[in-house]
Amino acid sequence: MTDRSADTAVKLTEYADLHGCSCKVGQSDLENLLREAELTESRDELLFGVGEDAAARRLTDDLALVSTVDFFTPIIDDPYDFGRVAACNAASDAFTTGAADNLDCLVVLGLPRELTDTAPMILTGIADAIDNMGGVIAGGHTILSPWPFAGGAVSATAPPEALLTSQGATAGDRLYLTKPLGTQSAMGGLRVSDDEFAEVVAEAAGRSVQTIGDEALAWMATPNRDAAMASRDIATAATDITGFGLGGQAQVLAENADVRIEVTRIPIIDGTDGLSRLFGYGLEDGESAETSGGLLLSVPESQTTTLETRFDDADVFYRQIGRVTDGSGVSLRDPTIEPIRRDQQ
Image (cartoon, rainbow, N blue to C red; front, side, top):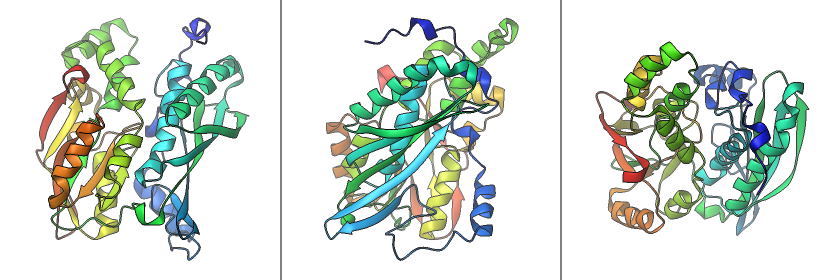
């Protein structure tokens, strides 16, 4: 085991103004950027691409290559844990499409000069996480940067017929979420260092802020591979919950499939609702940015029992959170909020 003691005093989050997936370009700004660059049209060379979580190219009749890239600023101070979360978040976009075989990662890493000593631990965290997902580190690129960031360009393969996009949701489908929400609020609570304000934060959380943060880290460092493999021949559409939050990602499903998404239930990490109200993150309204969140799946009602059995067998957390209907847009009004404690799930 690598010695991490030398890095315990480092606070990576102090070197960036935005943290984790909250550093992403806003949803409407991204849509405008793609439109102005004329990158919104589908390409004949690809099975799917811009507008999806990853791109897919058919290599043979039986094999498709999925590729994606994702990186972000630190969501947590520990360099090793930052690497683990960054790897899980980057690989999630491939898993979302159902691609999980032949996984490899080209690491993307940027650090201020004064933080270069943390690079080995960040890389070790990325490598351990990718290895745990059955993948390999195939290379990468490292630069000096005012804000630290880490992630990777990930590729994986799957049979073309097994691939999922965000376009297939159908009225009557049920919606499933495979991780509770609240990572932005949990990590925001951990970053509070002012003793006086820390008392306000602790009161808002209603339980140990450190425990909430530890649970959020455990969720962020949980790969979506098992959830993807259990659902890929059952789900009609999929995306993962990241910087656009539950509401934003649900909007992607709604627009791409020309349906209405109705969210009636939101599982959250216990204590993060109070923190969100304190910080103004909008967790209960589906607005809070998530980092390395779970899969949002649209599933035919006739297949829900099969899916839940598979999730149970694979020890995957899940909740049915709503449904797909005819219409357009996203309905997320007064959903039932379900607090989740990791040791009681």
